[in-house]
Length: 109
Image 1 (spheres, rainbow, N blue to C red):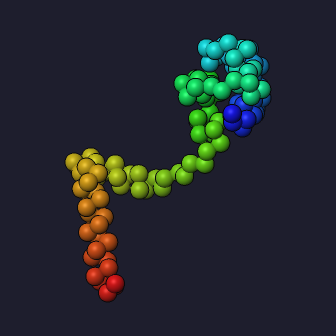
Image 2 (image 1 turned 60 degrees about the horizontal axis):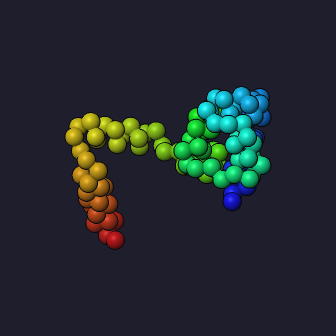
Image 3 (image 1 turned 90 degrees about the vertical axis):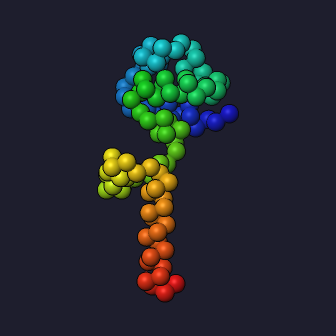
């Protein structure tokens, strides 16, 4: 069982100055169940982790202590614009492959 999850939940609960009772009520789970998770006696399902995450207003990735790379906003905007004009993923991939090929020809690779 992953002990880190219980520690993370407790850490964020205390940072938000929430009691076990308050977080349990906000997540619509029992206080004893939440206590079991925090004390590593209970292994929650993905659904329960989502409920607790939502109640704590913390992304699931933070509770699971997963490092997530943030996408460059300019790339996100560029892809959004491509999709708006009707390009799908395969067309975007094909375009990128074509541009990489052109660059390799130009550089003599």
